[in-house]
Length: 105
Image (cartoon, rainbow, N blue to C red; front, side, top):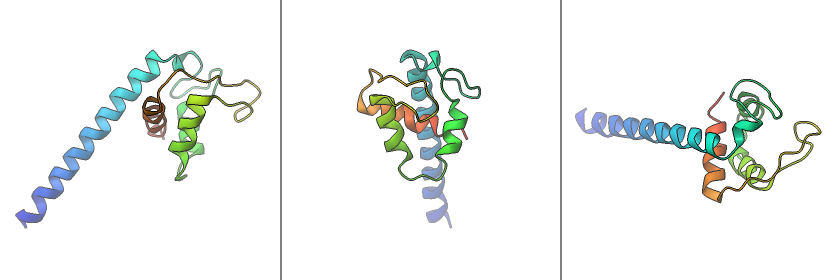
């Protein structure tokens, strides 16, 4: 029993640490990359709230890729007439932001 329980607990702890690191880095990027000028977590501002985005893409296996591309390259017409401009982020930062946004369900 111990041979199974210890690895499971270790995996669970690692998953929690990874989720915590994602939350911290996602929030830092949200605050430092200008996202907060148009978005909030639970209220629509100029753009949709992150809860709205997470709900729209719930269960979509391509959501992280799609949102990463949208964050990096911008988009128009997806959430209304106001365009989202391209953001000066690296591919890794865009992916971190996308993953973080999708945690807000």
